[in-house]
Length: 326
Ligand code: FE2
Image 1 (tube, rainbow, N blue to C red):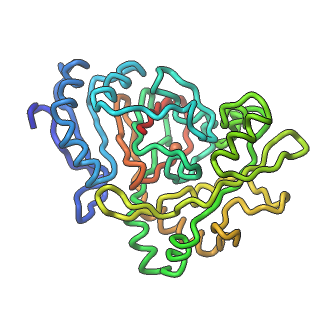
Image 2: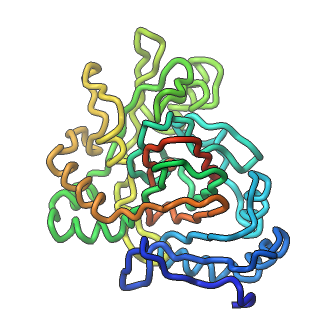
Image 3: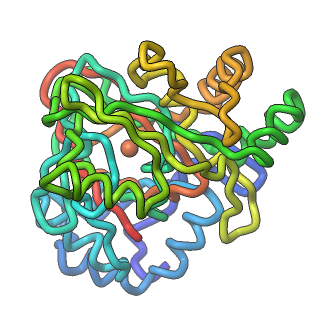
């Protein structure tokens, strides 16, 4: 390593897998390191850091001199990858942009936990990586749980091979109701105009058609949408297969829409997702979670194809910012 004061460390919150610790932990021990030196260090170490990300699925940077959204923006910029903007995404979470590539992670209230998911895997447009930055840590709770989906899939193949084959062969479809206006009280409260980036029903329908969705307008002005059949298993660049989808968060957290006669999660052929199998998957994923214990200034780089993330409920003020990579 080019700078002796920045080192790979071990900590008791990590899990150990055959390919190394999860997450990988990189700690700066130099109190005098300034932002521009940190940026230069990242540029010099970039290929090694991306290798660590590929091996582990998550890299946690601790002790770097980052205090503001602008510092975080500069740190991400050092990795030299192009951003995936919230505006063009189909994310259903309510967020606020702070710099062109940095936004608040989710405006859902503190008592609302967010279940494990791969970012935007319930849409055809998803980022490959995510950066999180802890500006303010909560008084209590507020960790970011992360879970290796490749390890989860390996365990599922052993204990529920038939379900895995169904996910692989039949693909999955998600249905949800987009409210008529943004609802910040919900974890999935983004209104249809802003989710679809449109101003009228006609524009909304044109966008959905282009994306292969089906839809239905409901009496209260909200919009019931169903995605095209999407893969539930994805191979990463490193050759590992992962349980890449939004099934856990949708199963545990999404609003029930059974009054519409539509299942919120189904296989691509329309058959409903078996609840007993889903509960088993949720329990197995829960066992694999590492809770990232945020300290102010921490940055986590997450491989969205290998690792799911969520948010624990919290007490106090917490500000964790995010940025997405195409
Ligand atoms: Fe997320």
